[in-house]
Image (tube, rainbow, N blue to C red; front, side, top):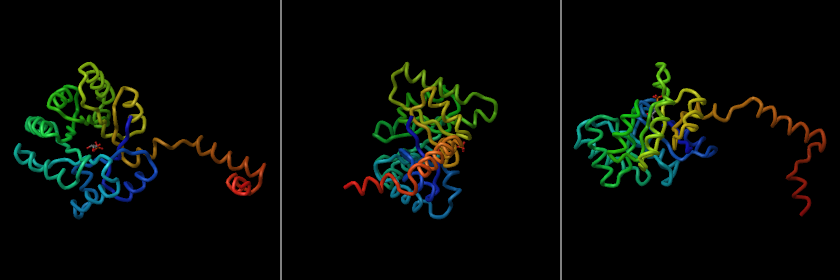
Length: 229
Ligand code: E4P
């Protein structure tokens, strides 16, 4: 399962883009509002950090059909290739998705809360659907089950639309959507850190260091290899 970073914070994007195998960045109006300031500069800095080969997902704010088309084309003209336009699932959003997909734009239909919505988005030509996992889990609904249903439906239909699972509050939810067949997941920096964290890993790494020190002293393996030349 491919992993994207769900934030517009430049320090976090720099850090995770350097250290983690992320394949892009996703934003939405709420995520952008947390950073504030000049939103166009922010988006263009994100693009500069991740480079032109990684995905950047940016959501439209317009709600009228012609305006969505105009905004989507302007977003991609501004941010370049591998920019995906996020469109919330509404009647007009589906119509705009169909038009833009036919023109070759990559569309991520977002704010999905059901597999039924995912079918419509896929049929409209979306590149991705973004089902919101924790927003369902938080109200005792089945966010993971919903992603599993979408994966099963997409497999059966042979659609090219991919599942970009979104809205995670726990690392377990991320693991669970991977198991049920999500193609990708977009994850906040805090949840990403919880994916790697394990106290036994820390203990193991500390053990390697102390065992080496006891046996070989302060000399490192690299020192020995360099001296050998
Ligand atoms: C993707 O960018 C989604 O908009 C995002 O994951 C939603 O997350 P939230 O439910 O934590 O707001």
